[in-house]
Figure 1 (cartoon, helix red, strand yellow):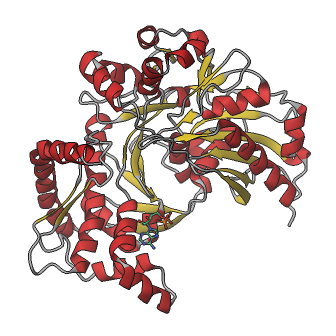
Figure 2 (cartoon, rainbow, N blue to C red; figure 1 turned 90 degrees about the vertical axis):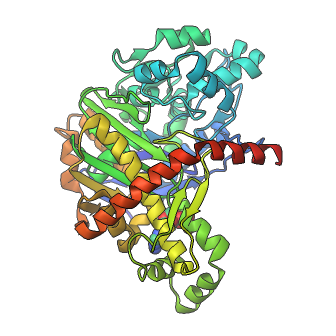
Figure 3 (cartoon, protein in one colour; figure 1 turned 30 degrees about the vertical axis):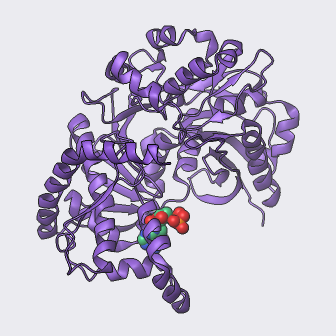
Amino acid sequence: MTIQGKVVIGVDIGTTSTKAVVFSEQGRVLASHAVDYPIIHPHTGWAEQDPDELFAAVIQAVGGVTVRYAIRPKQVKALGFSAAMHSVMAIDQEGKPLTNLIIWADNRSVAQAERLLKEQNGIDIYRRTGTPIHPMSPLAKLMWLKEERPDVFRNARRFVSVKDYVLYRLYGEYVTDHSLASATGLFRLSTLDWDEDVLSFLGIGCEHLPRLVPATHILQGMEKDWAEKMGVAPDVPVIIGASDGVLANIGVGAVLPGEAAITIGTSGAVRTIATNPTTDEKGRTFCYALTPGYWIVGGPTNNGGILLRWLRDEFGAQEREVAKKLGMDPYDLLTKYAEHVPPGAEGLVFLPFLSGERAPYWNANARGTFFGLSLHHKREHFIRAVMEGVCFSILSVALAIRDVTGPMEEIRVSGGFAKSPFWRQILSDMLGKPLIVPQTHEASALGAAAVALYALGELPSLGMVKNWIETTARHEPNEDHTLVYAELFDLYVRLYERLKEEFDMIAAFQRRNR
Ligand code: ADP
């Protein structure tokens, strides 16, 4: 198959793969190619990736799609980049990696994050930088590197994120965009510059970090070999773009203040838009930059669709078998059973913190809990309670964001959970708000392509992206159900507050008995 006419390629460097997605100038997906790579776990709780493998994946993803669809260099109007947040690695004088990429999922710096909060007035650092104090934050990771690998830290000439490294290999200069920088814990939101206080605490200077540029920054003059391997012209405009989370908002059409995007894939997130940097007195939400006047305020939860997957894999052998015979997706069968149970699962409440929790509690020791169990509860009650528990956690994040930015009027949902109309309705009932299901393909890559066109002056505003995206379904909340959920949500919050100490105890027990 060949593709005619001008195209824009969105390159999304994600956690499991890099995708190159080819879009028309009106944001229509024409083709895509993904190249996978593994996460390396050298020790429990560590999560790393090989930066050169990720660089190769970028070249192969773009090269793969241009070859397969016979896209000629002249057709490629621009490349726009998106990348996962919170990665960091050390680079030496010659530009060679001194470490692997330490990625967002790495928890080695738990102790450093705790000390930042208790001893360094972490809440102040968060309020200046917008990144919650957590082991995911490059700030905590750099503190770990300084304390645990002092020789590497001393010899490091630069500390960069995955995208900065890829662009360094392509252009020979260290640059990063405000958006990814705002997810490092080292960047001051109010000045759009590195935070001198945090840097001096770490004992580094701006010269150890990439040069800061806006998301619309255009790079040109790529090394010829790489351009050839990707099938693009060396002078093709490459727009640096932003982080995947921020771009995903654009890519689902949540583009104005009051509009929110909720994604529930394996994990989940709620994000909305603010016109100024906005942080939370209690430290519950993040604030990341896109362009001046365009900030994303939100919160990530660890416990999204992974919980239904856990139920399917650990307790759903029977359903998996039946589904196989019927040629159905086991998830569809599981959720069908749950439909027969009324809202509130007849008194079974589930706290979904099987992987600890990030927003709004930021508590790695939190654990899952079924509460209210009685003899009348059957497996379908458990399924429904799990689906509701995931939505309670999303509601708790949404309420924290509402405290910071005001109400959300239009909510767009995406991710694996959105395949289930029933699960979407539970969420709508719980939030007491209508939900819109946009037709999304590769939201972050679409956001990256949109920023690229905007940077070239060919898209008057990022808000125009909304015109590119069709709506596939809409849900209205059922008021009776909303009342049931409001009552149970109070209980959910009480249970969490009351069990905090017990969560610490069971987590300590687990650590001792590992
Ligand atoms: P997997 O869990 O097999 O990696 P996906 O990546 O497609 O699945 O989806 C992520 C999550 O979305 C799943 O763990 C599951 O919770 C949810 N999901 C996917 N498909 C469905 C479905 N048909 N009904 C309900 N939930 C679903």
